[in-house]
View 1 (tube, rainbow, N blue to C red):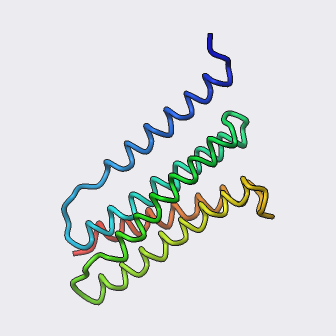
View 2: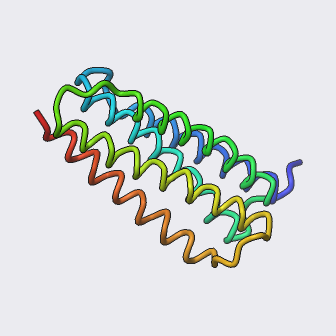
Length: 154
């Protein structure tokens, strides 16, 4: 018979996996440079969301620190991939160049926040959990705003 803790851990992992699958499948493969930037944003947002959920679960005592640490490691890789993808998009005009720079900056902030959560988990940060969660939420709103803006660009 599984312990309550093991069941909660399995449930949390299932939620994270499901959320990641849903979020990464939301953007189509079309759209030229704006579509490529949208996919990079979606990957970064998925990473930020997954870290946010994992960190909340840890704060609520519903997961283990090692699970949160592993989640951060994996999602940092995703954010770094998104950062690379965004920075290598070939743009067609000056407006797309500006958007690419904004996207790259927002994704870099996502990666930096994930590192900040890792620092917190390693007890090498003075930031509070509440502040980190608020920053992750703010970053996700920025990513969503950029995603919407790209969706309306020609």
